[in-house]
Image (cartoon, rainbow, N blue to C red; front, side, top):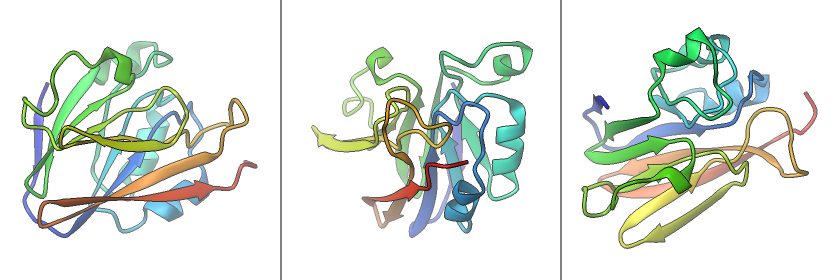
Length: 164
């Protein structure tokens, strides 16, 4: 589990998950201008990460559907430091095996459920950006932006068109 740093406050991090091999042009447009992108698994293939890397540096974890030789390059969890804030990244929140607040994390970013949601518990912001890939379970297609400004975290939701 490595630690990636970005030193300045007042930054925007793109949060995306469950692309399942589909990188929508609308997702790329929504992420334009972010300083970092976090992909919370079920990537679907290395071409998705390559597309995102054209926008900003990417930190990604593998999900339960990421299989094959390429997927081994991605860990199951990752620690990211952005704007003085520690973020824990994993695919399935049910596999979280630590007390995020006690470990010093301000945010936990996950995917897997395909349901966009955020909730704060015990000083930790839990964020699932939803699914940005093929529409599943009649859920909206979405991603999120995490704005970090002087230690304050704010989530902005981006709903994407459901057609490919």
